[in-house]
Image (tube, rainbow, N blue to C red):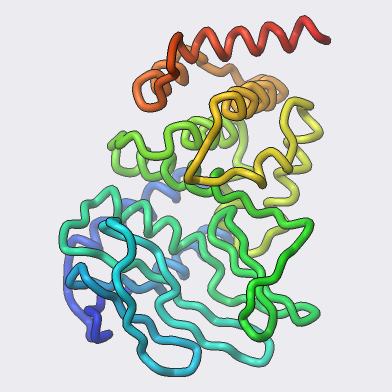
Length: 292
């Protein structure tokens, strides 16, 4: 992991060594695939953290020139493609995070998880290439124009939920970010390692296999329900359906779910206009049983 400034000059900051060790140490307890763990460590080692002045950040563009952009939104940290090299058969991307001076550890861990779940070698197939960050997948043609893929496996909302769920486990801090998606992702990862592995693997086959397993083991939610999730918005009715389907998925693996714990978290960070999430989820589960 390289620490740089906006001029791409290397810097030293021991704080990031501690964060790196904490992330990798945690993932070693969760990832049961040695080859995947090696990929994760390699991705982390070949990533960049850019310390900025808070106004702009710099990337090494595919034309070989450094380009400076205005720091977007009010985020203290965000993941970006820090260096891009377009080759005949692939797009090689070195991902990284840009940090404002007011960043905190939780933000760094969240964005680093985006970085190390990004595939760095993106190969063309029939003139189309995809980039994958967790469960968020983007497709491009050879001119680097966005390409629409009808059978895309991408889920933006699920991606943020997984990332924030892992971040809270690593840091022990519950910030209340993406509460609905965090609850969904936590449920979907609680009964097996399918989704966790798919999040980190560089190709999409594991994600496709997870969706197949989900649809085979319950009939409440489908891959289409997950793929249409937007991280910036979430409807209460949609979330209820997603949670119920995820609970049924756990039950198919004989994995007990503590609805009270889920409800308590959501009641604090994702309040309903009235009532409790416990009543909403319990009622939805009961109605599902009645209709069968």
